[in-house]
Image 1 (spheres, rainbow, N blue to C red):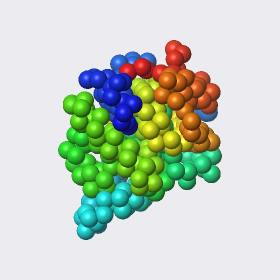
Image 2: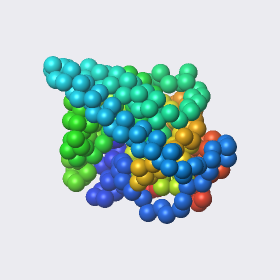
Image 3: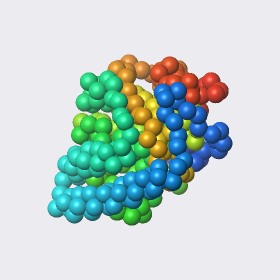
Image 4: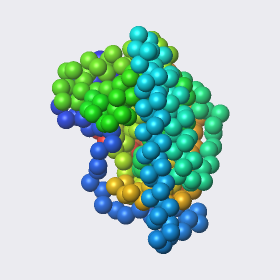
Length: 296
């Protein structure tokens, strides 16, 4: 999410690589168990329960999204208040989604959750979205491709809530929109949530980090708060319509101050933060190949 630093670093598909969110990767490795005693059952009863939970999630999100969208229409003249109202929607809807899914959840380091910061998360499952909606503080913006507006209900609410969108088809327009986004974060005392891997991991293993989040940190000088998700890849696997009762852990690490960081050391900073994730993830989610930065 950047500005002058991006002018020399982002070109064409490089920009897409830095900021890609939610698109499939070429991984083919199957998920592994996390070693915490979770046993996957494939009986007909568990399949039926899973289907009912997914339907309940869909209906709940449809209702809450519609209600919040209608409520925010009168707030059109106040765009940054809409961000905070969108966060309230996320807190309610995300918590409801997790309650419906029924996974045991353990949260560690919650004392760092109210920091104004750049929150980063590893990304292995649709459940990560619900957790982010629920657990990031009020006054936090997300970033997505501009096409999100075409997602039924959710996309329109995303736009109404004044979250950030990037036009990745035009590098010049994208760079300009990144500058504007960074200014908005600074000038309106906002936090940011971003998935530094840029896509979901099929296997649950940590992928290399894109450098977009680091551009934002260098521009805004906000601290970085890593959020480490464990077990979500077992609870709801990528491209699957089956939800499993796997235990989930969310761990906040202490804020990493970025005051005085320099652009020329960007690769070292990315590697350092990636190494923190490797240190705190279970063996089944550690990367098979070392290397913390995907240099776009």
